[in-house]
Image (cartoon, rainbow, N blue to C red; front, side):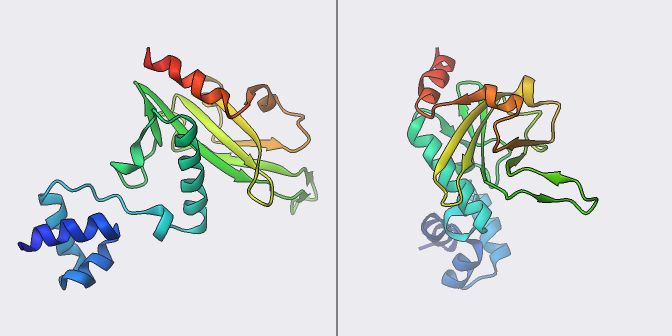
Length: 186
């Protein structure tokens, strides 16, 4: 079997350049160039090799895909894609945050327990943000669906546990996502 084909077959199974390099006995840089020459998407696998944060993100991206099963996952085609999903021409980014404890800033100012989402990289490209707000045990407490026009003025969205925030206007039941995004297929 040709070395390029061995690289492709190994990468399809392992999704890790270093592991493929070790398996086929060539440097990872050579594996990468062989994969690219064979038009193989080098995307990695957050579920197996990502950080704790990456693994949590992947878990909720998968959950979103189970709910909105017609969405096209962009991470399958591009490593750490800026946008997670497309439904027709509509782009969707899924965010997840565990509840952060209340505390006191160095200045002495107190802050409430909250969920925080960084949207700075996606705010110009995502049409919608689906945000999962988790309890400490990773169960879902809230789901928010926020249009880009509302989120665009922010780089970070912080939602207090107290519900005293405009962001609670955008809370939805997870089962509503299917019907909402189905509209964009028409």
